[in-house]
Length: 410
View 1 (cartoon, helix red, strand yellow):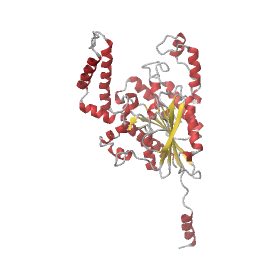
View 2 (cartoon, helix red, strand yellow):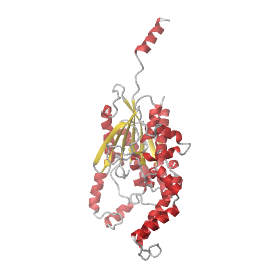
View 3 (cartoon, helix red, strand yellow):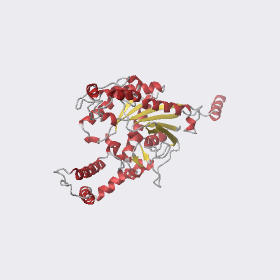
View 4 (cartoon, one colour):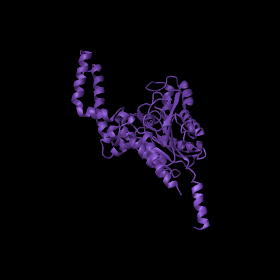
């Protein structure tokens, strides 16, 4: 062997290739990013041949959720001003939590997102998740470049009159509170991400500072509170009703990248999918507003909008609609309206219970009861708490993020 080749071979043996940087992904949003799918609904995923392989990735032969060997998570959440962090190796249980430090028995999109990333990368993966229920982009997550909160035309006209129906009684106090609330959760999100990145080994013990880290992407799943806020977005059935949301989301993307020092970081928008293909006109308009930033020239190729409507369970939604009728009947039995069953108000509590039980049994079959318990664990605005839906979302978000990363590579 020639001396030059010998030296090259020795160099390869003595000096191994430098380890790749830790891949960091940030997930943020409100209650659906928290995740309200109970682990008990996992088996429903296996009922569909198309998603049965996904269940085998999520759970082992014993049926218990898998624990990732190469992925870690820090989840910052809470209620009111009581926030906390849960962290460790990624597994199920990092969905919505009553106690931020305790396994909540639920998943959001983070579980299959992390499974997908762990499968792709040889290097360790870290997910930093921040999510709180009931939060808006127009106030709570409002980005700095979005400016101060601005009253809509409806609010400017109606709020000073203090006429009720959601209009504040003390307008001056409402304005003061709104100023304090504006951008609060954006700040908490950024502060937590920076806290984790400042001491990664606290969350991921296998992290090597010589290896470094790389911000691999950001996933945003939010929107319900904005979509149903008719005061901030009052122009129902108008094509530009949610234009402000699009504007704020574009600011949000820019500000997140700026504040984290990651100008080209891939950004994935999880587009609201509640009600699936049967969504009303306003929900469809909101979905379009969520997609709009991804179409801006500056974001083409580095921002992806992922529709979650295809992952909505139509069969579970049909059963949910029947349970809604049962709840409505419960109200009717107490109303004493002339057109309702208890018009005379003479039914006892026991008679009401028997009537309701019979009504439910006639409306919902035993097979549907079993299916509901197998696949659903929450309300419609939480995607019915269906693990299949959240698993498919997490997988789709990961694929969209990876697609952007692939196109960025030289």
